[in-house]
Length: 434
Image (cartoon, rainbow, N blue to C red; front, top):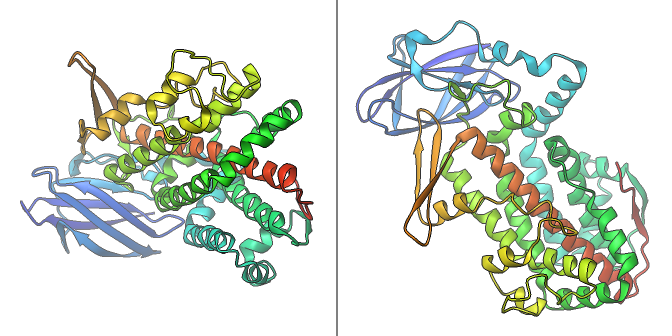
């Protein structure tokens, strides 16, 4: 069902009708701009059944009238019409226009799972942060207490998949942490993303079997230098930010990343702010390029039998441990499309988008929801890329998955160090496929 609320722009007095869809989660934040003066307007909607309450309104004042010049549809779940004249709003509701999402049992289950996850997102976020903190600070007694707390439904859900939950040494605690984060991200967020990337565990198992000695030496170096610990800490920070964005990204997940049934000229999303996506994309991009030496090292080892044997022999950096202190240009010059672990990264990170953000060469039209990314080359020529907000939101989801891919590889290197170098025997085991 839909409920109408009316606001008046604080700057120019323009009246706007908010046509709000009461969905699975009745709490929605909207980000729009006044269609006349472009003043930003933000508001929280909290509603159930036939009533609604607007909180924390910025840039506008709620009015109790039934007339407006413009209309903005709002939904925390679906694509909806962009800002339009009030007289042009169709009778059909947001839910009916998106009914194709529920046309069979599989799609209904997919939507139900995502909506339930979004409603409990704060719980999952707090769980990840708490368990990461306990592991980092070696608070193992508290971790055991948490794991054995029968009132913690999320932890208990994870424990159902355990073959053995007898934690006896440092490796067992690490393994619990690693598999727990994988459980939350693989089975709730990333599994539903329909992104085609090969199984990391299978690829690394192949490498471990082929290059045991060299891989053990590499894992010792990056573990003892605190490199993988730094990767892990930064990834957890990025994950916290991603979970804050998740509810605003829900319309992208619900259509399963397929915009073929959405007319992006007239429909868009109103529950996420462009500037937050821009900031998050930049952080993910830098996380990947700063730590891409891990991918390059494993490619070198698999393809050329030597971690320090780069395919680009003209590059100045010829030692992988020096490379780990280098930045983006090293990533570009030393990762090759058709090599062992490259395919998920090469031709997938948008340099024009990244450079535009870094140099503030972006333009965003709040009404059309089009973003123009501008990039100057060495000759001063400008190349533009245009994307809809929904397309850029999808890019943010996909770049977070690349961060996850890189984190997963780094965690496997820690695991190799525990088992091959430190000589730990695992007591805690986990099914690879849930």
